[in-house]
Amino acid sequence: MRLKAYLPTAITPSLFLPSLGTIGVGIFMMALQTTSAQAAGQYYNCANANGCKLVDSQYLTSTYTKTQYPVVMAHGLGGFTTLFGVIDYFNGIPGELIKGGSEVYTTKTSAVNNSEVRGEQLLQQVKTISAISGKPKVNLFGHSQGGIDIRYVAGVAPKYVASVTAVSSPEQGSKTADFVKATLEPNNDTDQSANITTELVAGVFNLIGGFTDIGSGISYKDIQEQDGWQALMALSTNGAAKFNAKFPAGMPTSYCGQPANTKVNGINYYSFSGVGQLTSALDPSDCLLAATGVPFAGESNDGLVSACSSRLGYVIRDNYKMNHLDSADQVLGLTAWGESEPKSIYRTQVNRLKNASL
Image: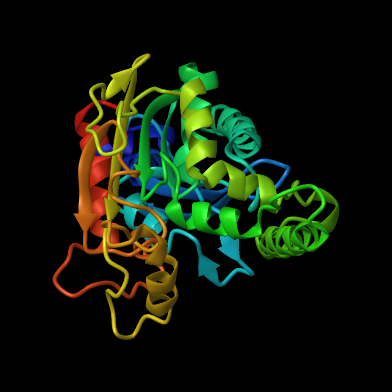
């Protein structure tokens, strides 16, 4: 008691300890906030002209998908990011990845156009993402035509790309596109009816492209360039051959061959895809994909892309029981019973990238 009486007021324990406690709590909270921010997976939507918008941020439940570089996802023909705020193109996949620590960006290019136009648009977004994230490279995922677009980015600007993963992508063209092209393409310049039909179909594709742009939140004045006929040409066998002559990295030398090189210019190349069209009795898209799969004449395909055409780099699998939409977890996540869920397949691939220090 006497000791307390002789202590200066400024350092009396009853005054000193609360102050110390307040400072300690403050320091602890700051450290906790910093640690939580570092341990959060984040998901950004880049479907606008002004950069990327944070959609979701979650604290890690694990570090299973915590890659060195951000994951960037590119949609296919007629694609979008989130349509009218309700339907995600990559249905639930970004959210699943951020739980494991991924930093995920979904991108928006012209819904309907060729892969060089779309690829250039994607490149500009990749540059923006690199600036936002502070990371010099990204891990690119592309579904369907998006799997060709990402090859364009890797080909013209390899310094920005750590890896390329093509998902159900017609790397050597689609026989469905060949069938539509052969049906619509004018046999000669005097076939006026064929020209009119071609223009009408291209016009419908262009309207669909504009619709998905607006649905993704892009203002009318910023709607991206649409060209339905150029998109069809790019997805045909001949169009793909011309693209592959410019950007051969990771490609096999024959139609049904296996790629010899899985790493080119320091970029790791991967692919996976499915086969079969009727994968769920509840999925309304199955019958449509069964119809679009007819031109393959029995060749293994997912309704729009053959297993042989999907091969790029290290082929993870080309025979998942998934149709073309299942591989982006559409429609409504209805997939085949007993097969790996698409979200799980993406998680495993991102973990593969993590283990490769990408």
